[in-house]
Figure 1: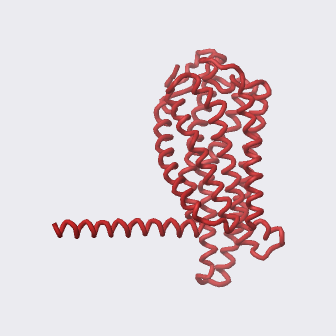
Figure 2: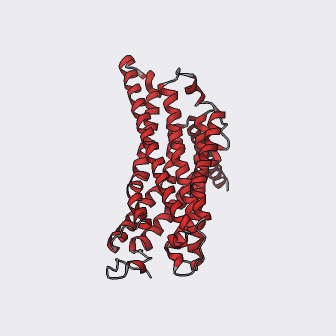
Figure 3: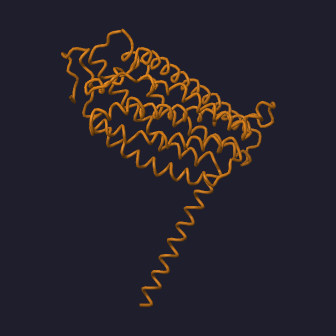
Length: 337
């Protein structure tokens, strides 16, 4: 049963559906829009990166981010279907056990790669002639090892949520994913959420440190030279700032409300039904901002990777030139008729 506003008089234990006009009508349309846009942008990015050699750690991390975003996009149609209540209740079970886990796994893997990218930029710009350990962070082989460890951490943290969402399901219990989890599954759900939130804030602090250090380095270079020789550093500064902007827009709002929402799901602390309804609405709205990340990551690729940018601009210029030649040819054909 869908409700446009919470039924305050309904018993708390019987309430499993907190949908509203926002979650049932607005969000599905927004998810469809970013699904189409994100698919086009990330397929284009993947097509370009397939032609870009892994010549640096940055390229390795960016390629892995494209994979994470494409996996994240796979879960969007399933989410839209459940928000619109399409199909049978078994569709909700599939989302609880599989596609929701895929969504969160891909999201946190992408967050960790943003942290690795910022660290790589910090080493390259702030400590270009630093200790040997700093030089190792820029090597392709090391970047591949760190990428494998990142995927491994993301999978080991969140995949058990899929295996432990194994209780028998029916039409009523499928509306609430927590009712499909075993007792161990509920404990793992809470632990994995707190771990992932910790990973996010640690990455956020890392981004802040890297951005501050790079900005200071750019300022010092500008004071010493006061010419265009620090132009490359300013570009890198803007690139790191773009990552911070994506974090603020996409991830900070969700992680501010994630912990209280998880407590309302798993703790013995009694929340009023109106509080649970409002927490659910805020969680769904901020989760959409996190999903919007798949459309903003290609902007990061364009700003941070010169090879990607040059390949994209070259492809665009070739397409424009081909279109013009085709137009001229068609015009000559018409004039000769």
